[in-house]
Every structure is written in structure tokens, then in C-alpha cells.
Length: 123
Image (cartoon, rainbow, N blue to C red):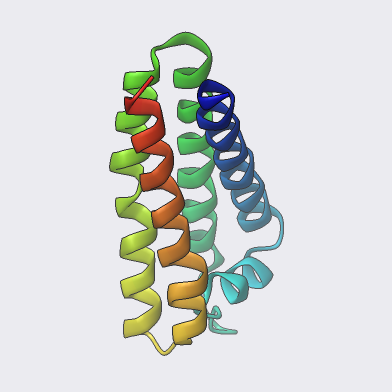
């Protein structure tokens, strides 16, 4: 059961990151608003596409680790990956986003990644 939860949570994380990435590539301004810092109307959408590509690459890497590597390697991926939502939380707070989004979305995501890392390390 422990293995199912650890890998199941990891798969959910990878799928959600891929979904966010596609959203940033397809509807960047809508995705930016959901991120917590809306894009400026005159802003350069290329930067939002960069975020989408970064997230998609991370999702593919995570999927590859889950499919072809060890639980320990996937745990390290989740542990190090938790730095991204923590950084996103700081960005949202520094650029006028709401505390609810910063903590309710980004900090909560980091906590889920850390929990999953701990589960994967114990397999």
C-alpha cells in the first residue's frame, strides 16, 4: 500500500505539472492569472511560454524517472523539485499576488512534493 501511495502521488504530481505546462503554452495569460501574478496586457508572452516549456520538461523528466529509475532517484527529483513551488511562492508574494495563492497553491504544492519525496525515500 505504501508503494502504491508513493508512486500514485508522484504520478499525480507529474500529470498536474504537465497540465499546467500545456495551459501556459496554450493560454498563457489565463495561466499566469492562475499562477498568482497576472501577465501585463502589454507583456511579452514569450516569457510565459518559457515557463510552460520548463514545466513540461520537468514533467517528462519526472515521468521518465518514475518509469525507468528507482524510487530513490524519484524521491530526489521530488525533493529538489520542491524548490520550484517555494520560489514561485516568493515570486507571487513579491509581485503583488495574494497570500492565499502563494500559500494555498505554491506552498501547499511544495509540501506535497516533500511528503512524496519522504514516501519514495522509504521504499
